Image 1 (spheres, rainbow, N blue to C red):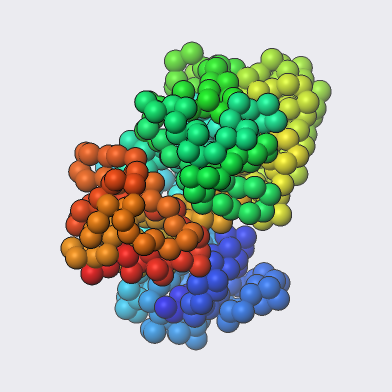
Image 2 (cartoon, rainbow, N blue to C red; image 1 turned 120 degrees about the horizontal axis):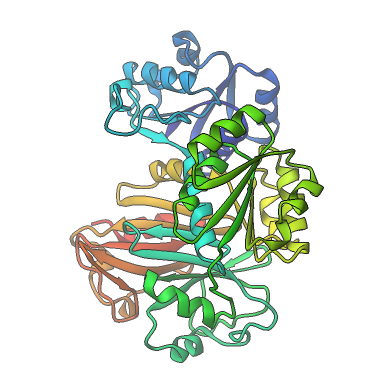
Length: 449
């Protein structure tokens, strides 16, 4: 597949990296020569300096032969015009990163389709929704939802005294036969393991459990974590992510939300827009202010400023003051893997939302959605089975499935079940599949006629 990426910033670089890993033909366009040099030094892709809104520049990038254009600059208007140009020049699919909410809702004058955009990505909004889910689940390090919210994937880090340490997957299932769940992945150090029945849990393992929402409280308790409700929450940074998190949480009954924003004018605007949230004007790096405003009395602390180092440092301070849950907004690849090892409970990234959407287009036609998690090499694919495909021929226990593949759940309409050995996938049904990168092609063949 030939892909033109407009924008060589952090998000554009990450998208180009994913495309290069998939052995796609990639051209990156940007006006910033230094950013393009950074891309050339680290990736084997073609770069062109110029404005992504220029037909001449896009033609030089080979836009007429491209299958996909991805516009991820920091300027909405550039992304929109680049997609409009690509659409007129015959590109099959266009993807735009849009921060403004003008293209959302029923009252919008122009839709994304009117502008030639096939997919609009709101990464800040996705990151905020993830933060809100993490706050609602006190014991979770990661939280993803599937099947319109009917299926949840929860990441849990096992403490040294967790009651499940030393237990195998089979023993764990036998311990709670009434709870429908499955451990889909175990991240141990830098390794991602898709566990078999004999795999034994160890301290500091990060386990990813797939289950229905109603079973999450007993699962989290079984893993040795507290599910006590978090009521007092402090948010550092009135960024788009911070404001959205405050909006989502301050509307929940029983939650008390406090937001600190360094810009006076923005703090005043947020105070008007968020009547159920206490908004304070103050420096994000003012430790005395955080302590004075009751950081040590908080149940949760969320740092979502534009300064990642400040997010890390203030979250570590919060953990030192025994705040139960800390969440930091991070995007630098070097920070995310080490965040939990140095004491943070969870990290979210605006780049990941873009990557998930892009990955969906890189997979075959049977892949309906793709999800990834920080630090976990496996992808989570939602796939639909063709009539006559190998996956439909017998129950899962009687099929020869490749290593590096686990099927977590199967859905048909409103029916949803956690997969077991006796589960048989029928034609047209959808499966949620955990798969390591080197066997994705084999999984695609399993679901194909």
